[in-house]
Each structure stands twice: as C-alpha cells, then as structure tokens.
Image (cartoon, rainbow, N blue to C red; front, side, top):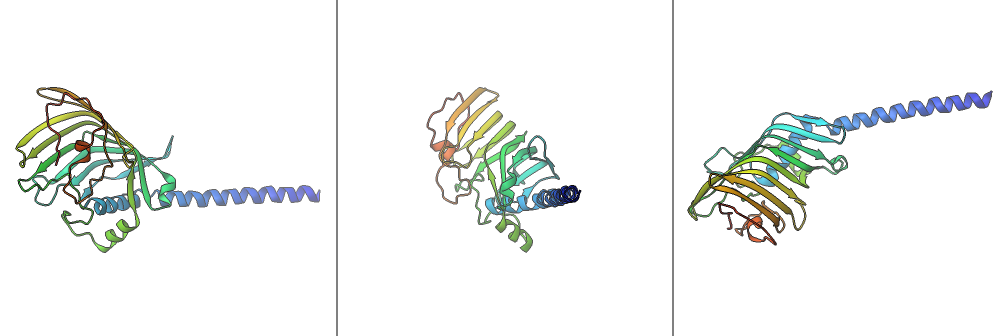
Length: 249
C-alpha cells in the first residue's frame, strides 16, 4: 500500500513537473515569437545590414506544419537622392523560420517568398547604383535611435532560399544609357548564403520572353566596392532570350 502511495505521488509529481515545464516552455516560446518584438528586431537588423530604411506591416506567425511567418506591405528605401521613395516593395512576404537560430539572435529565413514585388534599379552618370547597399548606413535616410542601434547590433537576418513571383522590374542606367522594364514571372534563388547560389529566372516584356539559369559567385550586395554585380559577371552556365541587359558594373 505504501509503495502504491509512493508511486501515485511520484506520478502526480511527474505530471505536475511536466505541466510546469510545458508551461514554462510555452512562455519561452511565446516570448521568442512575440510578433512585435521579432518585427522590431528584423527591421533594425536589416536596416543595419543594408543602410536603408525598412517598412513592413504587422507580422504573423504560424506553427503548423512548420514555424513560419508572414507579413504584408514590405518596402526597402531607395538610395539617398534616388528617384523613388522605395527601391523595392512587395505585397507580401512569407518564410519558414529557424527556431533554434532565434536562441543565437539570428532570424534565419528559408523558402522566403515575395509576392508581386516592384523593383526600381537605377545608376547615375557618376556610377552611383542603388543596388549597392552600404551596411555602414551611409545611404540611410534617417539616423536610427539608440534602441534600434542596440537591437541591430544583437540580431542579424540570414536567408537560405528565395522565391519571387510576378515581379515588375524597371531600370534606368544613365551611365550606359540603358532604360527599360520587364516582368519576371518567377525568380528562384537557392543557397543564397553559400559560395555558389543557384538562380533560375523566367520573364517577359513587350518584345518577347526569356529565361536565365546558372549560378553566381557569393552574393554580397552590402559591399561598398565598385565591382560588378556577381549575378551578372560570374555565370558558370546560362541560357537566355533576354530582350534586356543585365547591369554589369
């Protein structure tokens, strides 16, 4: 009888412990996935990594079947003195989130999807290109406050793969005299943070359709160097019927 009583107490104690652990784990998970907090950290980190202002609407999390996030009304500002308020806008963004990476102050996104982005590419006669991003913040349109600086220093955003659909792209390269616009039906970019990202693009404009496929060198758009865009200068293989030029310098 005494043994049965001890067994019951052990079982009850174990059940209580499980409830406490589960509850505590839930609180930890809830604090880690606070949409407002993660949104603020993501904005601060991206602004520090790009030197541009970021706009995004309310962030929502989904935990089934995998942890993912979604946000509407996304924007990245144009370079200082650029022709547009935003260089990139998108109707919505969705991505899977690496839960364990949050413990290391990283927002790790994979399968990032952008729906109907609008991208404005421009380069001045002096060679200033808005696709070159400066993590030092030289092109930022506003000075972040102390809170934003602290958040950005503690967190960073990593992207594994990107899928873009129905993108409107226009460019005005006043250095070379090239100007035009195109619709990109899809862009698939994998191994974004690796040494040889793979890219697959299909699109069209008024004169025809085209495809591009291949891989590039490491993508580092936050470099201040005046070297060429890696996606344009280091194709290992490609096929194209493109009626438009790719920026090369």
